[in-house]
Image (cartoon, rainbow, N blue to C red; front, side, top):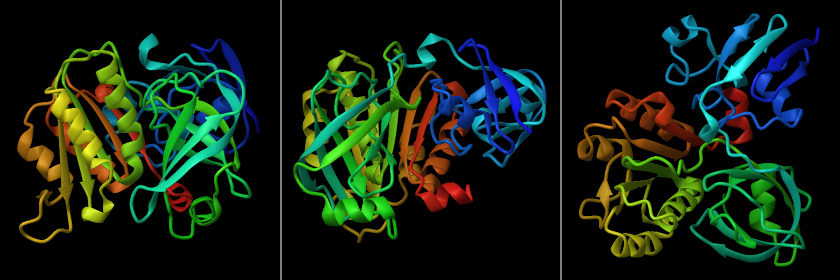
Length: 339
C-alpha cells in the first residue's frame, strides 16, 4: 500500500509505493534530496524521522550507528515507510547544492585512454548554457544504445565541456559499449547534477581526498575548484591503485602540487615490486601512517566500495566527525543489487 511522506525542507508530501524507499520516491518526484552512494554506506542521506515508522534495510554501521537510530535518525535510501511519515534531512543550507536539474544534449568531442581500462571522455554541450554544478557532483549519462549510468564530472563548473572518466566494468552493458564502440560526434544525453559529495567551499580546515580507480574524476574536480577558489589549507590526495598501469593524471597532479605548496599528492600501489617508484601497500595504511588526527578536517572519498569502507573506518577512528565525511562510492549494477 502506498504511504505518504512529508519532506520538511522541500515543503512537499510525496507518495512512496509499496516496497520502495523514501529516497527513491523523493528523487523520482524531483526533490534534490542529499545523497551519495545510494546504498547505505556513506550516510549522506541521513535524516531525522519526525513522525511515523520505517523499516531500515541493511546499511553500514558507519553510515548510521545504533546510537543514532535510538535518537530517531534514519537513512532515506534504506528506509521503507511502514506508516505515513514526516522526514527532515540533516545539515544546513551548505549541505544541499542548489543547482537546477537539467537535461542537456551533448556530443563526444574527445576520447582517449587514461589507463588500460579507463577512458577519458570530453563532451561538448550542443546549445544552451554550461551545466551548473558544484565540483564533486555527478550526472546521469545516456550513450547511444547503452543503458543510463551515473558518472562524476571531472571538469570544473562553468565550462562548456564536461569531462568524465569511465572505467570498463567486466560484463557491464554500458561501459562495454562505451569502450568498444563510442566515437567522436556521438550524441550523449546528460542529466544532472546529482550528489552531495561535493566541495564545501566555506570549510577552512585541512582536506583529505582518498581515490581509487576512476574515482579520481570527482576528486580532480574538487581539488581544482579548491585551488581556483583560493583555499589555502593543506589538501592531501592519496591515490590507491594496484600497479603503475592503473595510475593516471600523475603528471597533472604533481604539477599542481609543485605550483601549490598546500597540495600533496601520494600514489600508493598495493601490488608492486620492491623498489617501485611509488609507495606500496594499501592506501589506507599509508594514510594511517602519515596522518594521526582528523578532527576539524573534511574528507572526500571516491572509489571501489571496499576501499571507501576502509577509508571511512580509518578517518572515523581518528576523530573525523560523521558530517565531515563525503563519500562517492562507485558500485557496478551487480554490486548495488548485492548491497
